[in-house]
Length: 168
Image (cartoon, rainbow, N blue to C red):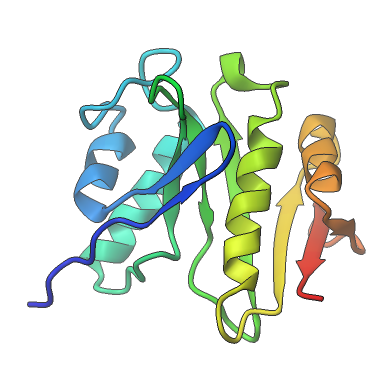
């Protein structure tokens, strides 16, 4: 068995994005805190769903470290405010990111800051030339996050708005 690499972390002005390892994901997926303080008391639905997918990938032997879920924590107090992560490892030069914040953390710029950090990191990795993200047409707050993070809206597909950020 290969040892698990140390968790990856990205630090921004106000946040730390902590890579969620499979053992922590298993706890988060069922609504436990995994020993962390969460805004609202527990991880939100989007974070729980992403943690469940990470858990399934790990159980199937196809979890790719660095290319899954990250817990978004505020730097000053360490409180977790949501999750952000990749839908899987890069393929064909691109990767997709999704994010979800606790209601009390919305409207504060955290999603934009986290999306800029994770997409910037991804675009610095060899072979990654584009990052995409999607949202429902009615989710205007997420659309504003994508715009502020520098993403460009592409053609709609499957009833979703698709946004892309490319390496210069």
